[in-house]
Length: 337
Image (cartoon, rainbow, N blue to C red; front, side):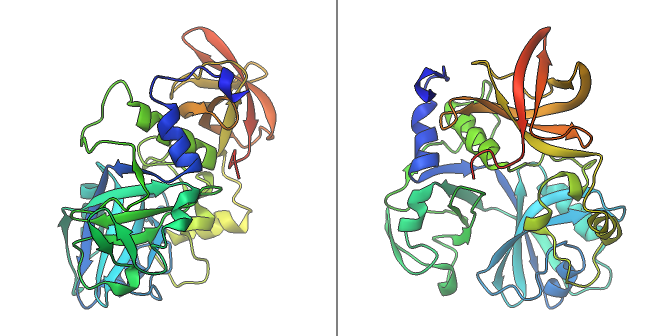
């Protein structure tokens, strides 16, 4: 039973808001503005997603790849006007994204710079009742505008941020307002706090349940798209050429059979070993835990882990941490759909 699970103090409230209500977190994100007459054409040739037909106010997730097809960043692109777009990526990756794009900006009418914006991310079924993506809503400090009414960025740009099995939206801008009916569960601390705050552990929990990887934890510059579980969300196979396309197309033609894949772990104990713990199948190393937390919906600790493709899923595995062995079920993602 979920009530039997021993979770950190302060964890349950934020988790319930994210999973059952409308919980909001200030996420640490970096923003890069791309503007100029060639901005759309330039990004179309650099990103895996088709951005050429993106409506003003529209947003889409994408990958930025190296010429060899490895991951430079998992990001989102939002179109603000005819020739101005904003990319946002996990904090700490903005400068590398900007540098990577600058290397390919040859004789194009494009200017790029870091933008001082914030991201308020709202998750939970309660987001569907806010009406943000369809019209005006009442905010904590007045009326907030929907994306189709982009006349100013003062109140933020609203973008769809749904995860598998979990509705959501993000508010992007220099000073986003918290909409009425939304419970703010985090602070605005820009630095990583140790130990992990309860709200961040709750955020990781719903992220694990949804099977959503993030830069720096599951995703690095050594990652290839086929192993991330993000291809369906981030890659267009009908657009024209882009940097790194060859490996993506080749893997797709082979059924995306990468040497490893991102899976979920559901533990049978009441504790979750941390990221970096070794996963074993029949006492042979087969993968590594990346992020772990607690699922009140499932009533057990959960984790994301990369497992060797040869390991069939679902399956029984074990996780080793500091000499302790934790029994777990390896499952396909999402854990809660």
